[in-house]
Amino acid sequence: MTATTKGGLSLTLHVWRQPNAAAAGKMVKYQATDISPDMSFLEMLDVVNEGLIAVGNDPIAFDHDCREGICGSCGMMINGAAHGPMKLTTACQLHMRSFKDGDDIFIEPWRATAFPVVKDLVVDRSAFDRIIQAGGFVSARTGAAQDGNAIPISKVAADESMDAAACIGCGACVAACPNASASLFTAAKVTHLGLLPQGQPERFRRALQMVEQMDLEHFGGCTLFGECQEACPKGISIDSMMHLNRDFLLATATAKEEKSEMGAG
Image 1 (cartoon, one colour):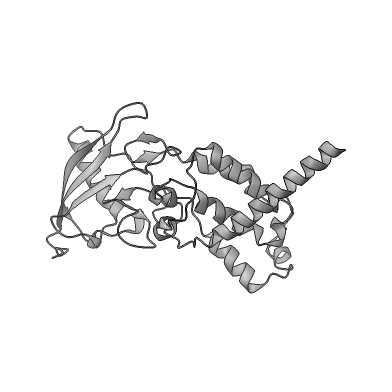
Image 2 (spheres, helix red, strand yellow):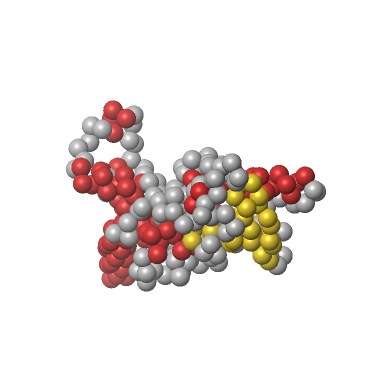
């Protein structure tokens, strides 16, 4: 039975502690007592850290920024699930009422070769930044909001593009995938821009370059397990991969044709 706010929750935390990227890590046990069910998961970690600092111990390092489910910084595995047990929820939006008094909670960083651990629960997600730099941009002048809205776009395309644009780059899709694939992230970025008129000049080059960069970052390949969409806090569908695969195949075929023509000339 979940404890009331008055009594608070008593929890046993098993947290991955790793002082730096080169050092070995291990799970360390902590007691979290008198935790309000109305706290967020990150607020609970704040309370634990205050206790650690008070006795001169190193606090648990974890990423956070907006704490409103927008920035994507707070990614961590909670009891083996990306962002914890609630669907469509980031770790900062997860409340302690999702747990019961006396629960054991296991907290780990994202596990992927492309996301090396920096310290404790903090991982380096700059691989995502490099995928974006490879092609996640448009060269077309979009002007102000009024100018952008002057271009007719079908509601279906606009809705699908906006759904893909909801990606916050948290990395939950990679952490949940058995192959540590970044295909859902990359597909969301390709779909977001590829469905809009402003994204057409780089459309096929974008798919080719972003997929090539994804491979260079040592992400795994997609085998359509579907765990990525289940873990995504923004509910991005695996259907976006259809757009990625289509544009990538067309870009690859076009590149081969152009290379063949150059060789013949």
